[in-house]
Length: 495
Image (tube, rainbow, N blue to C red; front, side, top):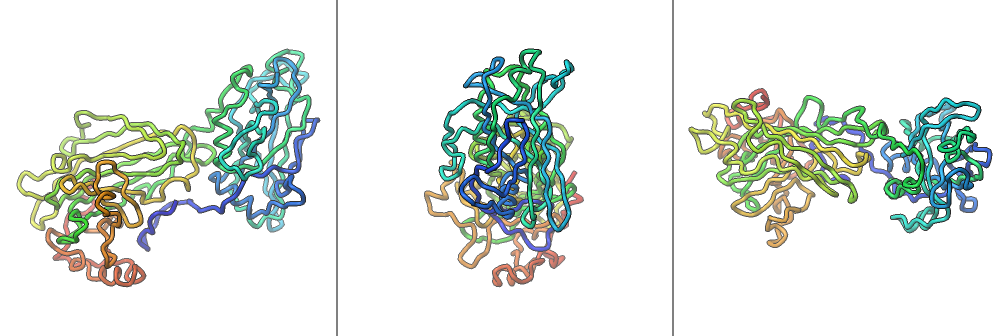
């Protein structure tokens, strides 16, 4: 979800795309009784309704670059198959996309389950993906308007697609089920196909997650192997880059501007998403440094990233002592989240970050540099999540001011901490009446103002940037007056 328009000129690696709203739709074509299906993804089972390729692209985006189909397993009771547990084996799946006169084929696919079976005429068992379901039960899915609401769809099929489908002229899915050697008994007799027809629907992310979590028919099926390989991390996306950091500065006298030197607490941080083999976010990792503390107040600093409501995250937070790079006492600490990830790397900034010779740390023009403690965290999500369903970078870095009881966010975010008084006191906006923010994220090369130097004095273009509603002087942070800005740059604070 888009929460914050980042300052123009800062380059970030991101594939987050907002998709149009779509509803799960039953398809006209099905897998036939011969175990083969040619499925036109633009043909709905509802009358003559056409699923446009723009809608297919919206389905692909909603699932994070994957087309996901639901399958209604409809098998005869052979072997140990019965009404509450039935299965078929998937041999091959190929998606064919024609656009601009070129044919693209995608043969990689996954389902949530696998098994080891032998093909007809062979006794050599190999691993294959499977569909498992049951007969005739109704699913009360999240979307009451989609075609699979109150339906009997069971399993899901995921096909990663790395091209835009909106201008395609045809999108066709070819499915072949495996003819198993039923003479061997189970599991081959269970995972054969015999009755057909297997109906299909193209589904949204929410409906796919709903079906996957139901795990329909699995408990009574033989030799079920969960497809763990779909959850392993295969690549990373870094924010803002693999070597770069966001820098966030705060004015902690909120809701009053105070001296507006924007150095009351300065933190540098980086986040990376670990993507599974289907391109979904499976891990979230981060690291950062305390850069400066120019406020007389005491603070806690937190990083918040929204997750889908049903998502679970578990992991660890570690804090390192800047004086010797050792892990600090009491760490690592376990962290977890449900529906959101809220990490609190820095609690009690005064105790964590002090200068034995000065009241402030790294904000006085004559002071020597004091390195700040470093944090790292890593969490694993219980299931892969499309990146666009998480808070967009630079995420939601939060300052909690202990003396005032107020939390401070970037513009367009809302208070969320139980311990703060913002909502109770009506302090829910994080800019003043003239549009001046109390928190900002800037590039890592930004040099914050020295103590008692107003941000508008240190960076003269900043005032016009705000007064123009952020239309002019968008690179204001590049034109600082040397006498008013810090000497403590990234080469000093990143150790």
